[in-house]
Amino acid sequence: MVRPIAKIGAVVENQGLHEPPIIAASYVDRKAFMTDTSVSEKLNERKAVELVMELMAIPGRSGEESLVADFITRRLIDAGADAKWISTDSAHRRTRIRGDVGNLILKLPGAKRRPRRLLTSHMDTVPICVGSQPVRRGDTISSKDKNTGLGADNRAGVGVTLAAVETILKNRLPHPPLTVLFTVQEEVGLEGARHLSVSRLGKPQLAFNWDGGAPHKLTVGATGGYRMQIEVEGIASHAGVAPEKGVSAISVSALAIARLHRDGWLGDVRKRGGDGTSNIGYIRGGEATNVVTDRVTLRGEARSHVPRFRQRIVAEIEKAFHAAAKEVSNVEGATGSAMFEGRLDYDSFLLGDDEPCLLAAEAAIEAIGRESQRAVANGGLDANWLAKHGIPVVTMGCGQRRQHMVTEALCVSEYVDACRIALLLATATDC
Image (cartoon, rainbow, N blue to C red):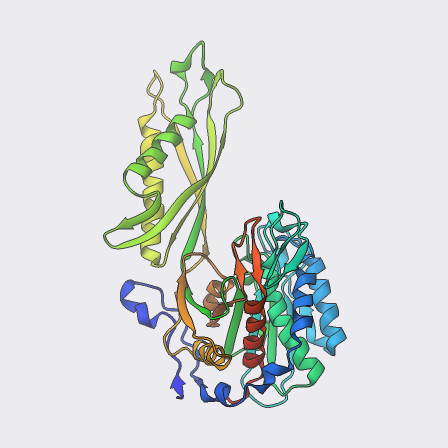
């Protein structure tokens, strides 16, 4: 059935989610995917698995993705892509971590005059995956070195998008205009997608992202995240000779954290008017036991699908530290202080039920014999920033298991299914 686009966030408008820009209407014919699935048979499954094995062995944590970008570029050119179709932007010069390469972009001209389509995945892995030695045992790939993660998050996503494009190029398959985006620094706050040169994408009308999870899982929304740094200042003094003259920044911090925990504003936050999460994940201060510590640095975060409630969590954290700073004083009545720096890492989003990219993804999943499942994530995705840039995108998995752990694994059959889904979405010309 042909169904029109709906606004992002329309289905949760009463929950207070922000309203991103309205995207121009387009339509999806779900039958198009059901009547011609033969294109997925063009996928060379053995080579697709060999591809992801090679990708996972390449080191490339956040900010150090150049080796991965070079590998992808070589593969694209070898498959028949014109070097002029491939470029990188300068996102890495604007990210918090100064990187060695920007987002990698392939713009593939279409054989038919149809709306442009976007396929995307991120190139970076977390540090624990550096040194991965992928080995296959049956339907599972894991790292031979038990001290490293596999890196399937997100080299499997890169493998899916790259395998689909290679199959199109090598078999000269008809397709609409395609943009393929490989982002950098997703694992450190979606930095590549945040600083993406959007104008280079060519105004795609349908967008699909591949990241963690099962291939039939459709992530249609995700929470928003705010990160902060807290500087607590006290007064230094000799802890043995004159402790009463000092104001301990450690005591201030401890009191604030205890108050947040007691009042339910730390960890899993559930209050009238909303819910979310918060965490203080970094504390550093003090040099010696015989000095009353005069400075402590803390870093924390607050998340919620509802922006106003996330702002309330942040306000409660600030309130707790200011109150604690006033509570701790020295013999002369002097107190410490708390200063805050923070920024929004990414805002929340939710696709409407009739979003064309969502309907197309559901149709492609059904076409390979799987039943799709919608989900909303409590973590950030590149899709958060793409939505903010005005590009609604649905995220699918590639068979990854236990991401960010040394026991990480990749399910081969699910990865292959993800490749088949990507190939269908990249070539269907009736939507």
